[in-house]
Length: 149
Length: 182
Image (cartoon, rainbow over all chains, first blue to last red; front, side):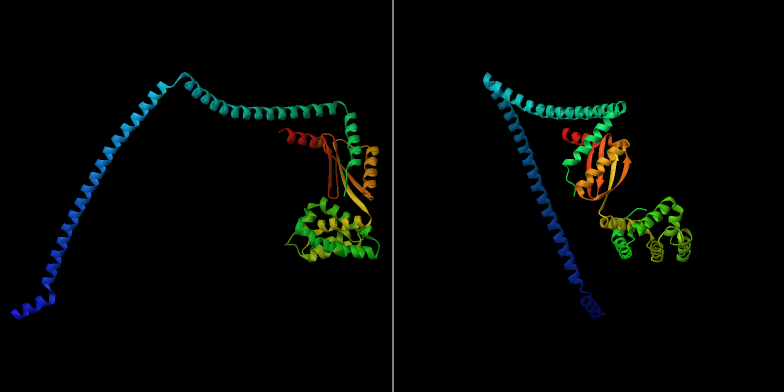
């Protein structure tokens, strides 16, 4: 009977399986500890960046204060120079817009002018039939100067 | 019948064959008037044209109709034969292009240039004669002119002759001014 148990014990390798289970548990515990350490490290990093953020905010505020302080210190002529520079930039922007507006107006006027001219020409041709004859004669005379292949 | 550019190449072959016959017998003017006569009939009868172009109508029926209409009339037998060949070879849609190509050959042979003269009002005979004389002198060719009245050109003249377009219309002058100003 004992021999049978020994045989089954050897065949199934119970010891090996128990050892393997122990080994897995040890590994899980080890991994958990490593995860815990990593989390602590990340937390430290976040704390550090928050600390830097407040420092950066302080720096920006100080820079702003310095600019205001410097502006206060500017002389009248320096202020005038800045104002002039602003005016020039604004003039440049408005200049482009003015040029576009001029161009559009010119086109509109030309288009309207041509429409009026065409209408006037048609009305004149209606009221004076001899004009057709004149334009036809002009076209016939222009044939002299045209090269036909 | 609308002429497609791909039809022109094949049409030229038929036209050349007919022109050779006309040159041998010195009757290409008669053949041209026959082609023009047939073309006029087809243009004025869309039903006949549709019948001849139909793919469901038998060739024999088409040829029968052509013979009934044209045989014994002023249509030269070569032209009637050409129409029958076109029906036989399912190429009747090439007829207008053949006529155009043949006309061009005859005009070249006769030293004639075809011109279309467009004006906003009817031209009187004096104007027509002046235009023809000037064109004939310039080209050293006889001019075969057709006249079209088109109010859209406003005033002046537009002359289409060969590959030339002579545009002295006020419509174009105004359009050119518009391009220059805007």
